Length: 508
Image 1 (tube, helix red, strand yellow):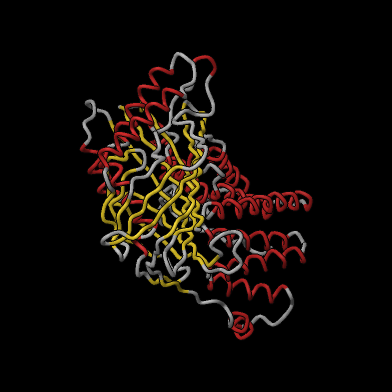
Image 2: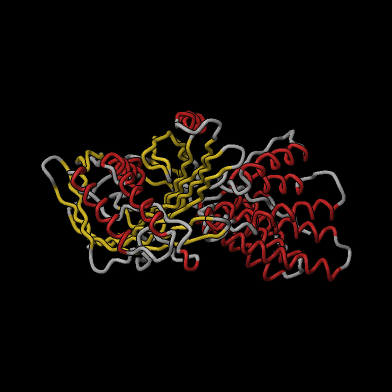
């Protein structure tokens, strides 16, 4: 049977820990400690998957016993509804581990029929992992799992399907600049075709492998654009997941000012905005909770001619207006129920805090920085991972700013819009997580009741489609999650929430 490859998932949404000297007892102790205080935390979920991976990579014990142990850890995570908050579309890593478990079961089975069933189940899991890793913008793991689709077809004796799947993996390698993977895959492709597969033959296949780089420059011009925003929220409350969605449209105007550019936006047409209220309610008592109010209007922004952010205009008046509008919408759209009044007061107070002038100023400058300013003058090689640190507001605690680790790549070239033919835009992927020490210093500065502990985790992933010749954005898809607990021995206040905001720009 052809061996499978292990996908190396991007550390974007949950952080895993591994150690060369780790033992099963180490994992069990860690999971037990985390499970006692915060069983649904991202750290706990990741530790369970780390344990499953440790077992698969050679923990002692009979084959079936090891696989059942790994399966139990993966199922505990995959069946936990809170994973829908961190990964609304599904989590690729459990799907990959399920593939590996079933792939290994096929090696343990001696009965041919059972072995075939194991491989068919593994094939389904591998295909699912391809989709989930792609949705999560983890393109290398996506390509690796496509390779595993191919080798599973081959193990099933489905030669034609194996070749087709391996060619699809090579197409992904070429699209995303994964040269090392392509080299291995070309060698295997030639072998499966029963052609010479030595270094010379592989080198011939790689002769036209694309070497892409992008040079990004700021060259905005005066003009108008239509912006559409689709934003979705998810939150775990009492073991259930609640949702909300909004859809809005804006006209964006870019005009030359005295010393640079002035960017303003105006709402257009009918807006669909349910405010912070979830789609689901809990019977006559009303909803169990509300979502954090979202800034759905944008102040006028001033830029220098070279693209540096200068200021957001008239923030005091703007903040007062959006705070008033948000509080009015909260009350107007409130569902019935005995819990509603308290939740309405909570949401109104949150709007006052979230829409303070300084918070809005930070949000506007951060968004522009991640979308445009950080790329000005950059030259990026495709597939190379870059990193830097930058102060960003904490998701879910917008008035607190902490240094974040930013990892980013130039993923691929593609059309600027679905209708365009030429691949004249580039896709950039950014992932940000707060640095451990600065985050710890901030958390310990909060005034908490005696003996109470505060735990926090968050992540930001951003997908950008921009014209490298001008840095005009065509799409900005930002995905964030945050996990917060406050309590003593057992947290009495737990918040796990996420949002996904997708902006599309249509220039006139």
